[in-house]
Image 1 (cartoon, rainbow, N blue to C red):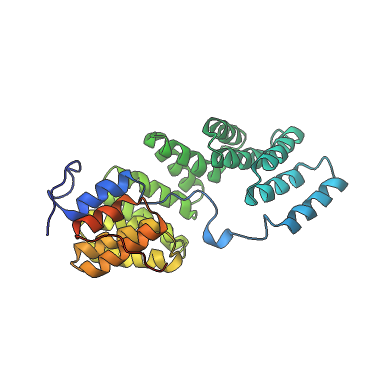
Image 2: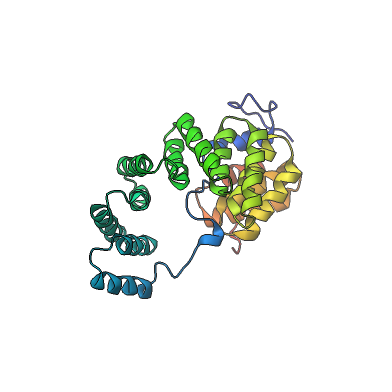
Length: 287
């Protein structure tokens, strides 16, 4: 069954996949990656015990910028943003060339929605160390999310040139290509990201969207399944999985996936429109 759609001239006219991709790409059904890779996450970092230990270090060494940077990182992990900013600020006061502390403060500012301050800190970090690849990835994400894809692409290219083993740079560059309907390039970059961090769910979800755009619903479904294998709480992956199943003619399974998406995110447009096309209504399912 086909449905009329406008707005995506690069896809075949009336394609269901085109209809969903129009919603998906505009409605953030793919996910950016800016933090550490899955293998780098350490839940102890933001624990009360770690913060207390670092505070004891600072009591003994009150002019140690590295200790302030470490405790600031712990505060950031614990979602104590103001304390984190205070520590990173103290770190750069003690050592104005401490580019990692500028970048860490930028991340906290970004999480707080203070993008102008975040961008200024990333710029400062890169002026001190033009080879700081992680800062290029992070700054590129700010540019991309604020409709400056050319600047973002340049930053991701620099990050990859400096560190070809960072999956985040490939993933986020793929999102630029995907938004430009350059899906072959997007698939290549998502695949590189997956090869470097096979347990990260977001690149599978992103690659699946590009496979849908290429008319390969079977490969897309496989990727959405892998994404959900590593994170079953991502509404966009369930919604996108529903699209692939619908495209393949598996109506009941598609309805189930759309329901799972809505259970996680009540306003998920892709899932709600999918249920509407299939003549179904939301029925709560166990997530």
